[in-house]
Amino acid sequence: MKKNQDRKNAEKTFLKDRGRITNKEMAKKLGVHPATIARWKKNDEWDLKLVQTITDPNDSDSGEEDFFKIDMRHLNLLNDRIETYLQKKELLSSEILELSQAKLNIISCIEILNDQFKYSDVREAQLREEPEFD
Image (cartoon, rainbow, N blue to C red):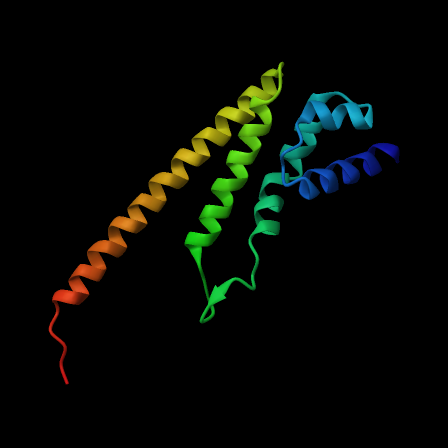
């Protein structure tokens, strides 16, 4: 029973800290192995839950989500997590893996944002060139 409560507490801590707490820090607080935290994080999809908590459904324009704001929040979150890791003197192999995955996610997000900007700039130029009909 204690393990289930520890697991729930670990998830709450992770979400409250916006994912900036490392597996090693959390494991030390709970008295479990960091690999246990990593397993809970993966099995319970904490990262997905974290993204859902930072994606505020009230941030919308005319009923449509502002994907740019959401993407920027995700990038900032990932950058915060990476910065937290970089402050540490020692990293576990699972933390190095998570850091590299975060870097990959940032790169993917930046590529998507660049594509969106290119498309929106091209589309705006097309709209300016099209004659208006009255």
